[in-house]
Image (cartoon, rainbow, N blue to C red; front, side, top):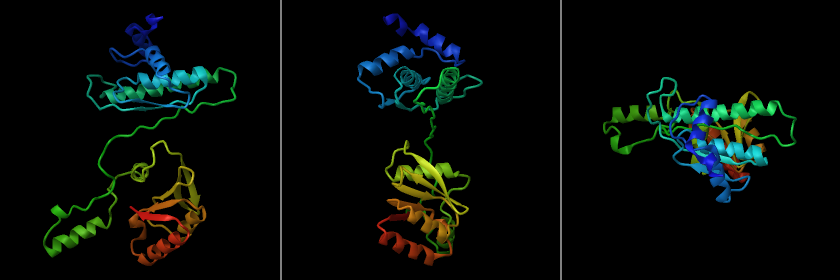
Length: 256
């Protein structure tokens, strides 16, 4: 029985998908451990030292066997390697998950369609600084001219060259919602907002928001709404009015 847990099997598994990594754990070993630890079909598997990503591989394989919906979280530092195609261990981790998913999807395409389609998507997050400028009173200029310039710069509080997806997920985390929350992109006229966790939160990242958009979001009755503070630049009246309207509808409103 335990023969399939030997490291030679992991070398073969990685060789089949072209992933260079020494001393990886065999998929069958992690699948076995997941089973004897009592994980159920909808559980979350966490590997805080992901390495090549065997835990994700095992979770995906187990889902195929019992039509489960296990999710996984892998944590891996970007340790440097000497490999041309994979500069860090984290790059190996990500690519293995991609290739395993691709292989399973290709296998599914050749099988008869089943009643239950498995969700094999995954997201990659990197730890970084905030996407928003943070006021530091200790380092603020003391002279009037310097302070005025600092305040002017802070009026545009979104860091440059940061994408909307980065802003979105930082706000989701700051709202104490999990990164696995369902996110649906929706439109009101030409403007976009994100429906998070089926109405638990609405996030709008438009740089100049309209009253039509704000009232359209409010009509959907989310529990909370977050907009960028710069979206109200030069229109304090709109911001004041919408704060009162949201409050009268029992909606918690914040700007970032």
